[in-house]
Length: 181
Image (cartoon, rainbow, N blue to C red; front, side, top):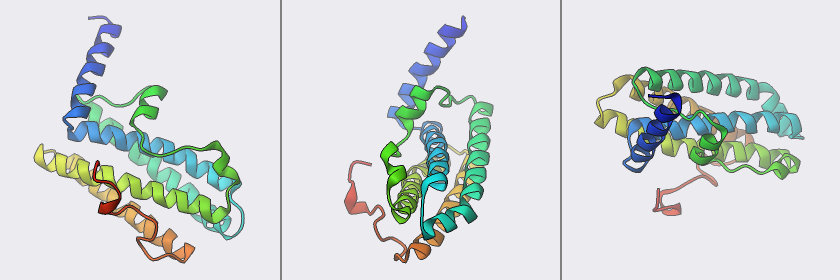
């Protein structure tokens, strides 16, 4: 089988997995979200002003390092288990659920920081779903890695919401927001 045929087979299987969904497919969304989020963190660190710049100066690089390490770990875990992963820019754009807006770099620093919090929160939706699927599929190492990521993200949400002077869930997703997820 040629590399093109193998890739076409992978795309067909990936499409099936994303419509089922499977733990691997849901983790593909998480991987895409992590990549896009690291780019958004980098942008906010460069452009945010005011007090938000201080928090980003202290935490942004740690967030990026943690998300990139998790990105690499999840990619390796999926590949080692015969799962496909997003590998093209088109796939990352298709699988991410994080919103991008080039003009956002000119928003107030607190708004940029809060958008990063909302992105963390969006990631939790996919992570909790993937953990449930991993448990159903008897994939404990995936569930353990995702549970660790979930705990870390919740720490970052709490830290940043306190910094912004918000209650923990202020402005974040609630079950009433979207019945389609």
